[in-house]
Length: 379
Image 1 (cartoon, one colour):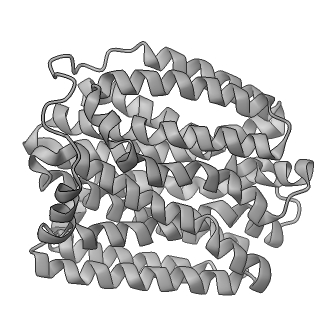
Image 2 (cartoon, rainbow, N blue to C red):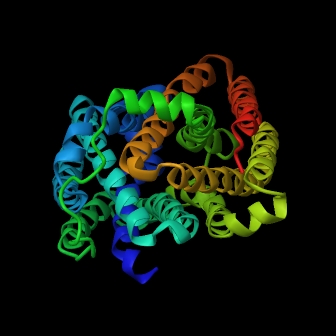
């Protein structure tokens, strides 16, 4: 795993960029006089191109080597991170976050492709579990550290440090010089049709979309829910509510063993989605301790499903690995885009319990999708 360590570090920094602003939402909301849904658009603005870009950038991803794209995206992310700090207008912030969203799918698709190449067919499950673990750590510590800076210093300093780390990371060797710029990963729409329908990946992608719809909604509006239950909650306190990510690290790294214990990928995915739904329902209880506990179960189930699904699509990708990873990210972040907006509108107008009802409906759709995968011999 040492040879993919630079790739995993790049993923961690990418998720710092994506999620570090979330604990700051109450601060930004007050400073810019925004509603909860308006503030949530700072996540939506980044996820929208994350949903659109993997496929619309297909020719770019095919024309240049993933190593080069990874380095360029890291440097440009550093520039936009500084811009986020300096911007004092909400519209400008949205534009900057949108630009970051254009860069992140290029970075993440390149990382996923290089990681799966480095691992080889025999170690894809472990390598992709390590990748998912890196994204978990990035999501957790990005939020936690930004909350610490907000409480004990100035949140802006964190983003300055992050921009420097991104530039430094762009200088690291990624160990993939043996590959030509584009060998076999050209993206064609007919290939997408084959992957979605003939190879049965469409059901996997639909389930993944529902998975991240729920997760994005919960993580985006969690700071406001914490504020409802504890009006004195600090930035650090809100950041610590994301500690459930730690169980996600465990389930991600243990996904192969858990799959074996669960009776195979199909059965484990079913179990994972059921546990996911139970954790969602638990968050309806008006108790901050129960909310904190339920988020551990919630994150553990989410990243178990995510790890198994991400590894499996790479095992069936064959020569179309970059296309499959682009499709995976497209559907994954489509769920994120919708989840960062639609449930928030329900939350604003009807309250948390109706918000939870929407998430449970999405979980049911994902569970049904998973149940159909067995027909495609998902084992």
